[in-house]
Image 1 (cartoon, rainbow, N blue to C red):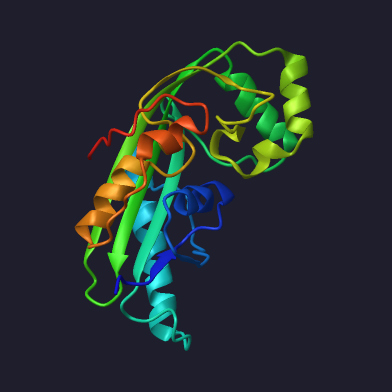
Image 2: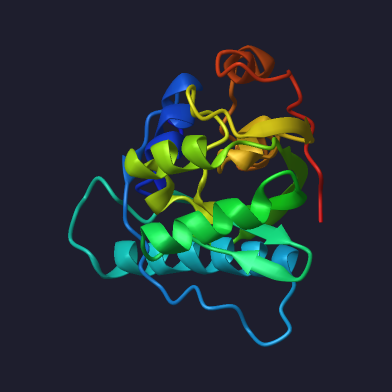
Amino acid sequence: MPPTLILASQSPRRQEFMRNLGLDFAVRRADLDETPHPGENPTALAARLARAKARVVAAQLRTGSRTDDSGQALVLAADTVVALGDQLLGKPVDPADARQMLVTLRGQSHQVISGISILAAATGRQITRTNCTLVTMRNYSDAELEAYIATGDPMDKAGAYAIQHPEFAPVARLEGCFSGVMGLPLGDLCDLLTEFGVPVAAPLASICLGHGAAACCHPVHD
């Protein structure tokens, strides 16, 4: 019997990918301080936060009383960091912050780094990977930017945008992993699940193509 899989994220996009892969999973929230350490680079930050989120939820399982979240669980966590040069762009605190981020990113190329980590609650074994994608934004108009902000969609997303948004469609070019920009690099996810004895039979490229992207799904290891 495969281990219980716990997703340490309330992100609808990550949950959608998990369902598309045909995985059975439960969801736990991982609350922690996501402030970067002084001098911490984006890749190190994404990896550290993914590891920490998995450990927070594993600790919850050890102290909890729910039998379905047993000590045999695998905890999956991810974190996504948007970086324009040395500037880290997190989730906007308000619409004005979202506006500033989108103006800053307009017409520019930036990096989106997703860290992904799986932790076996029973043994403490943990493997973490990062996936980096170069994203170039189109030169959207001020009117398009304001209409997008008015939808509220930017407010829960690093960098204040969703690559998959059908109306705003902010991205002109992508070099790397579409699903990684959405927050869960599928190639890395399936590699890690296989490492922990959870096979995935779903066609990864088809899942990415279902979101209108190129069939990338090639992991980049740190």
